[in-house]
Length: 132
Image (tube, rainbow, N blue to C red; front, top):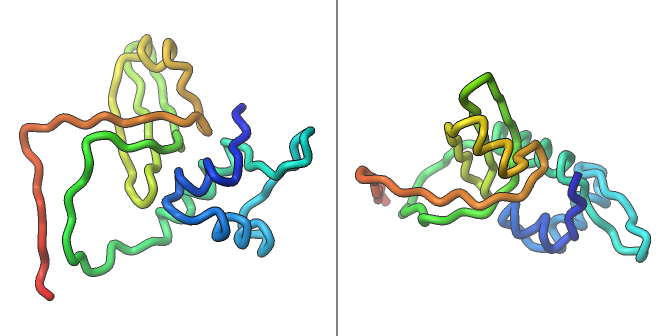
């Protein structure tokens, strides 16, 4: 299971390093101490934390929006059957779900807590600018 530096955890959650440290100090996010004395967060713990935060976050009022084609995030759920796999990621405030072959998921070694990049290609993209 990967251990993520504070800066990596912050980047995956879309917040500052100081915010992650504050959450650790407040007991909201568990951390571990590495052999070199630095603080880190276990990948599985960060995935659970990201998922809890996404479940609690309301979308709110959108001022402008356009998703990027590549989003770095952390895997929060993997469901496999004989042929297919469903992989869920949290990339900052965005939840990304991918359906792929089980073989692909196995070859990539995807598991909860893994860091991954979602590349998105779509012929139908909606861009919204709601009322001010």
